[in-house]
Amino acid sequence: MATVLVHAIPFPPVPRLRPKNVAAPARCLVSTAHQSTRFVGLWRHTCTVRSVAEESSSSSLDVGDDEVIKTQLLEAIEGINRGIFGVPSAKKSQIEALVNQLESRNPTPDPLLNLQKVGGCWKLVYSTITILGSKRTKLGLRDFISLGDFFQNINIAKGKAVNVIKFDVRGLNLFNGRLTIEASFKKASNSRVDINYDNSTITPSQLMNVFRKNYDILLGIFNPEGWLEITYVDDTLRIGRDDKGNIFILERSHESSL
Image (cartoon, rainbow, N blue to C red; front, top):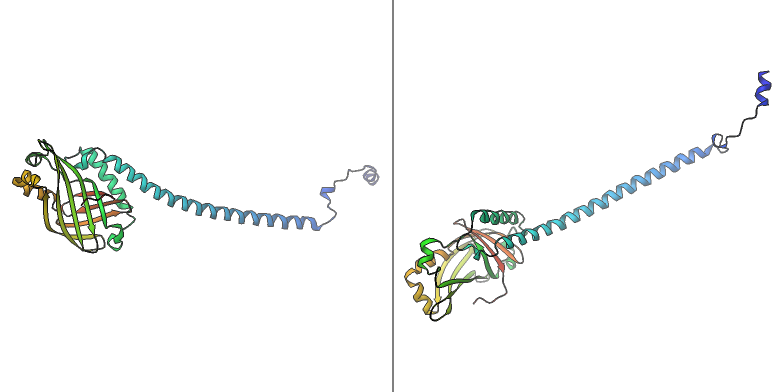
């Protein structure tokens, strides 16, 4: 009876469970494996492309970060008259922190091997040299004399530097004048120069009459003799530190200071 029942009850066909071609699953497995390989290869390619793009983006951000720091530094020193009459300690700390950041990212670590970066005319925008107290009073910088621009002209071929400090004198007869200091320098390392004072002049004679009594004080402030370490330089900005612990920030200038 059992045999009759089995043959009497019809079962619906299940074609998916009974593939006609036995080799089909094998082809399916090969296809799946091929797709998997393609996927892994594509994933690796995508990661490689992404990695290169991220590195490129990171490099661009580094350059951009340098420009951001430079902008922040120039904004920080704006309106403080180059720091010559002193700055609040918090402001000074802010400026020095930005200077340290730029120095750590110096694009020209051996500036004296890249002389085209160093030579030419520069304009001082900040320094830690100060004229305070009785010195400022004796030099007349509280009342009738004001400081103009500070320029530095560097002649690499001759090993000469000329510093020009401009003055405006107020009084019965308003006139302008300048202190010019000439110095020679020689290479001490790939980033440091030794500087020797050569001579100085004040023009016109009226300005020399004003400063004559305290000329030693004036020259003592601006005499560059010693050594100077160039800690940062690019196409538009230069930072240096001297043997007296001073910091100098200069922008490249296309003005004629002489």
